[in-house]
Amino acid sequence: MSASRPFLKALAASITLGTGNSLGPEGPSVEIGTSIAKGVGSFFDKNSARMLSLLAAGSAAGLSSGFNAAVAGCFFAVESVLWPSSADATLPLTNTTSMVILSAVIASVVSEIGLGSEPAFKVPEYDFRSPGELPLYLLLGILCGLVSLALSWCTSYMLNNVDNIHKATGIPRASFPVLGGLSVGLIALVYPEILYWGFENVDILLESRPFVKGLSTDLLLQLVAIKIIATSLCRASGLVGGYYAPSLFIGAATGMAYGKFIGLAVAEFYPTINLSVLEVASPQAYGLDYRIVLPLLGAVGLSSWISSVQTKRGDGSQESSTGNNFGGVMPFSSNLCQVESSLCLDNDDVKTTYSMRTLVSEAMNTKYLKVSMCTLLTDVIDLMLAEKESYAVIIDTDDTLIGFFTLKDIQEYVKFATARSKMPKELLVSELCLLNGGVCSIPWTATPDMELSYAQMTMNKYGVNQVPVVRNIHGRAYPVGILDPDSISLTYSALATRRALS
Image 1 (tube, rainbow, N blue to C red):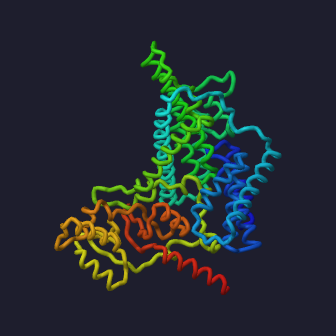
Image 2 (cartoon, rainbow, N blue to C red):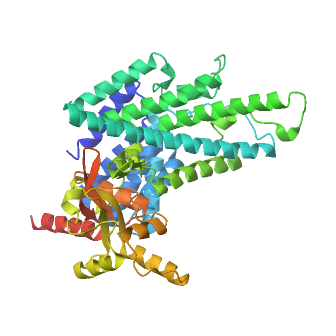
Image 3 (cartoon, rainbow, N blue to C red):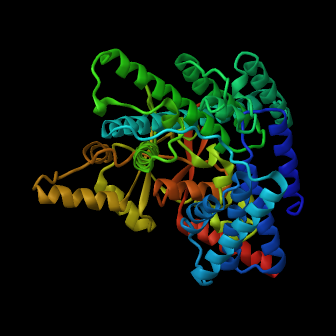
């Protein structure tokens, strides 16, 4: 199965993209590269550090061949594999770096031999007209960050709906790619630009083709929204493809619409005044600002910051009229793994081949403290001392999940109150949660049937050490366990030991 996975992935991606579905080739290219790397590593050497280097080299080769960009492949390997790795690397960094660079270069050369060396885009000539344009690029970065959040939210929403439809109707999973392709085909009858044409449709957006009329601002904005919906449908239905190409299309359309709007606004407000400080570049510069390095960095930095801030805040923490409804946290969270599966390179699966098949139910700790909002904090401390636990789950009268806090949260509040001589004699859990700025909120919850590697990666993303595991019944979340680093580490070690004994 492991040996056939890269070939099956390539076949599925070829069918998805060859029929025009709204995805891209780069995600599958990275997955194929990493799958081959895993196969090679498991066949020759099971050393975790060497396997990590092979994974980095495979992902770099995959992106390099997909984009014909060796440098981008190297940076991707560093950002997605090497940098977030928690594995104890024993190989010298120079060995890993050289392996990644050589792999990316060789993959790029092979790609050029087979596919040619034509650039992916035909970039029009443009320049940076005036310093007054820089704030406009920063505004573009904010706009792109919001569009990025819309794409992530829409994908999560679609994934959740498809899962609910499958559970409610019993429609086989294999039917959903057909339904997804049919839906996208119907949309394309009105908006054919959203189909995958390679990068020809991006060239049309950039108006780089001679004798091809550019698209209006209204149509560009429509394409942004429709492309987000179509791409989310493809991803949620199980069609195989990446998000890089759709993201380029969405970003280019957003930038072009923004550039045309700015140009019209300047011409409208200053029809007779000729001030160099108000000169703006052509719309293409906002759609693909490659040569304008300073605005590029500003726009990308702001866009990335907006997305990361919203993710850290846990935009899925929604409250219903009856209290905190954590059953809806998972579908609405901004999850990079859901958006682009090729980024799900959890390096703990280097330690054991079981990691990707292990469920949260096998690793969660079923022994934990349950308290109510009316429990005294002194009683909570006594319970923690008796049970030797450093955290507690807050439940409602019907045993549904309300919140979560740790001993450290109590200690920090005690220091805060003591410093201001405002320590109350008796303090309830509800008062701690209210006075300490939402310390009891939960940014994310896991479910028992979730893959452990995915849950661990999401915990790292949110920067949390303990996550409640819940069962969602009729839209309400009932706690069944706690997932923490100790339980995860113990599970992986036990599985590896069992494998060695067998």
